[in-house]
Every structure is written in structure tokens, then in C-alpha cells.
Image (cartoon, rainbow, N blue to C red):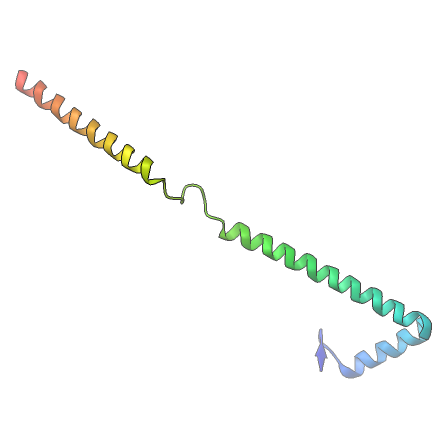
Amino acid sequence: MNIFGVGLPEVTVILVLALLIFGPKKLPELGKQLGKTLKSLKKASNEFQNEIEQVINEPKKEDLPKSPENNSTNGLDQVTKERDEKDLSKSDSNDK
């Protein structure tokens, strides 16, 4: 068993020292408080990770396709404008 690079003998020594320092009455309270703290840290870490993933996966506004209505209208306007420019250039060269 290897927890954070600390083996079973080291964990046993730490638990015995904690028992001697805090006493048998205080040790369960400390364990409960440690559990709550670790749970809240894990929850905060998961929330942070979810927010980061949402920002990464969120599409950019420039990458979003335009609506079909806007594309067809803009495309027709562009074609009409180009055709009118060609017609004007032809009529100008024919006038000369």
C-alpha cells in the first residue's frame, strides 16, 4: 500500500503519533473534520475542472456557421453586385 509516497509502516507511525498527541476522544472528531475538508476540496476541484472543460469546448463566435437565410441573401447580393459591375464595365468599354 502506497499513499502519496508513504507506505504502510509510515502511515501506522503517523496514526500512533496522532493518537498520542490528540487522545482517543479527539481523534474521531479530527478524522471527521479531515474527511469533510477532503470532500469539499474534491468538489471544488471537480467544479473547476468542469468550468475549464466548458470554456475549452465552447465554440467561438467566428466558427459558428451563419444562418441559411443570411447566407443565401448575402450570396445573392454578392452575385448581383458582381454581375452589375461586369455589365457596367462592358457598357463602358462598348461606349469607347
